[in-house]
Length: 239
Image 1 (cartoon, one colour):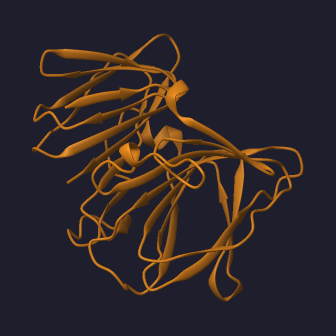
Image 2 (cartoon, rainbow, N blue to C red):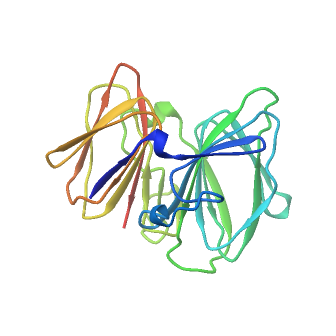
């Protein structure tokens, strides 16, 4: 199964200073036929206006991954904790038994664009935790190294979540192909910028900014950049 969802097919939402594009049923966008893909419940593409903040809100039993694409995002969490996440920052938040947090934009003149992903955890009522790490575009150019992995697998010393997920965000700057092994798992692709083409078996599909693909094909994915500009792509490999 391969399903391509174009940028235009996403649901656009505006809530005060926040403009969002929802890839899955979320908040006021209710679509029972588009509720999730495997353990991935949400992939929200947010733009928060300069100098604005969101009302703190509560989560439970979710694994949340945030990636700051451009600008600067502020995070306020438990016990008055505040953190500033700059461009290229990734954050993992295990909501577990319950956590309250909020986002804000500390810049007076620059919006912040960030992706926020929600995953079902592999078990409930975990102790809440929050971690972050920066991975620059230069570091990720031409490299297929995971920025988030499974805590249960104990792979590497990077960010981890409580689900069998590997998250890659490579930047493709030349014609070199990258290969994502299938291993009979699901892959979700989200094109952040630029243009790519992926091949699964004998099928070829193009992706432009904001486009996504949901894949469960049993074939390895072969991905290459198309066009002249570098391409940034999020690859989610999951059960």
